[in-house]
Structure formats: C-alpha cells, structure tokens
Image (tube, rainbow, N blue to C red; front, side, top):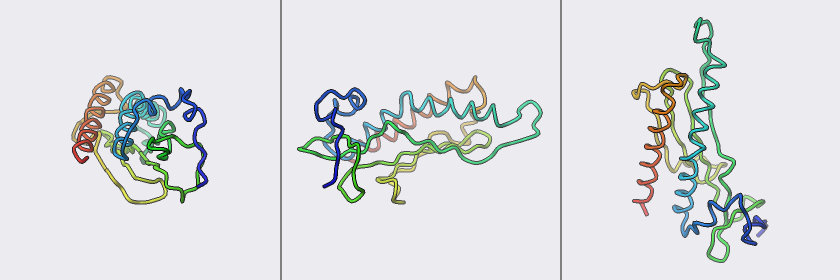
Length: 174
C-alpha cells in the first residue's frame, strides 16, 4: 500500500488531528460522527458568517437593482482522510485512491435565495456520487434571513440542532 500517515499522529504529538485521534473511533460510523461533531461547532458558524458576508457584498439590499443567485458550497479542510492501522484510525497525509482509506466528502450547500435553504450532503468518497446522507439544516419555511445579523444566532442554533438530529440518527443506525 502507498499510504503515508501523518507522522505526528504516529508519534502521538499531533495537535492538528488531536481532536480526532484522542477519541479513538472504532468504526466508519464513529469516524463520521466525529467529523460531523467537529463541523457542528466553529465550522458551522463560519459557514453562515460567510453567507452573511456574501449576501451583503453581492446583493444591493438598499436599492434592489442587482440580485445574485446560485449556491454556495462549503467543504471542510480539517476533515482528514483516515486509514485503519493496527486497529486505530490514523489520518493520512498522502495515499493512492485505490488504497483502502476512509475519505468522507461533507458539503454544506446554501441556496442564494430568500430564506436560504441549506442542506448537508455526505458521500463516502469525493470521487463517487453515492450519497450516504442528504439532510436539511435550514428549510425555506423556517423564514430566516442569512443577510440579517439579527437572524444569525437563530440560524446557527437551528442548523446546529438539525445537524445534531442527523448525528443522533446515524448513532441509532449502528
């Protein structure tokens, strides 16, 4: 196998992956749950902070002359590719796609329209189209506005709650 592991993780001195390696996940599902728990913190708040910034830069809310539509797609750099080595999942720094590695592709898509429908999409691999989970974080009918600083705390709280519901659903599947 052509797998290069994070040498600091192997030596037990990696601060970058410590949030993952200290939990010692035992299954692919436990790995996914750890990744989702990581996203549910600062990363999720950062997604909606960036949506707020994009909304206020791209759309002319005072004059309504220009609207920007489309989707913002967020992926997460801190989610490592891992491989089971000697019974432990270890982050890898380099590997061939054919090597039996676990690489979840987690994206949050925000639709740039009124009430900003937001969904999380989880695939087992970035290069495959097989979707494991497709879950709504913010629904159009929630009537929240990402361009409003007043709605920001409600948006984050609701998205975190729905992400935790997904985590609970995955736990029950084990």
